[in-house]
Image (cartoon, rainbow, N blue to C red; front, side, top):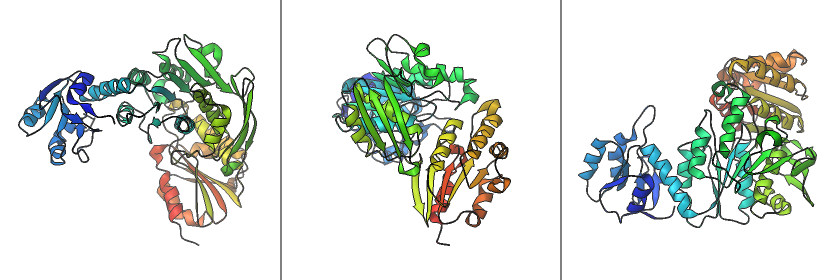
Length: 464
């Protein structure tokens, strides 16, 4: 991060310097007392199970000498410490958010925000990959996409930055609104409107409303980029007081995808057209749906002066965030690791990628999908019905909800090709008797299922 004076930080957090020097310098931000050190500014955040004000003594022992606090006992204690800078504020979480917004204004960079029910992390990675060929570009790492992760990402950006790409997650109304209030993006991107978190938001209409919060601070200077083939993101529904750019398969789109070829784990190939420019893309990532993520990413990058040809060349070197259709191999087995999370649409897309992959056997190991509300059994059965049409040699379902995947598959699939385990551990005990060399295996389920444990066990498998 860019070095900041304590007086600047006090202004940014809307607080008061209560101890130390206003001319003190801060070179980093920490919310973890175990790693806060010399030069860091420590924010003790209050969570559901703990209040990090209790860990301020540990941060002091680590060498940290600058603090933002809201508890009086912590303020009184720090005033007695030697060489310590202390800023008092009403709420340390809000202070962290306010400081990140203040810091972004100092940097003066261009900002792109990305959200969507599925594909937002991949699209974020694609936009960063494309922009990074021409600009110094920063983005969230991993799943740092919430009210804490986004501010910490912002405050880690170096002063030479030119672009920021910020993934924004949510599972409740108002969360995207709060994030765009911090970032104030120049461009917003929505990948799709699915059913993830429908349990909290009530309906797809509710999810659409929550995702559209990305435009809450938009005016005629801002641009919204969407995948228009999504029924909720058609031009008539989302037109507003901002510029609108669409990508998709139909001829009305500004960026048109055609000639799509799914090569399974070897990647995808497709044509992307915009105005008078047409460019064939070859991506080293599985999943036909990633053609549409790439189209949206290229559309967003075009606003920063990047051509389709430049975008295609950049994406040849794309590396996706781990556990998102990542191909891993061991003992003659290929694993498509898509264990980060799951929704009905992403399950079906991953199954399509498996169906397009060559192997002695195509095997899918699918776990439960969470937060799907009262229609959860139906969504699981629909995934099973889709799996049955993918030419699988073996479908293995794991978990209580995934029994509905099995039911859906058995409507048309040979029962000898379908197995179900109530618990992940039960399958793992039998795994080596079920999978074999030459298998191509998709492993997917909601993050809470911990399906990555199955992938790890396959990667540890010794030659049979």
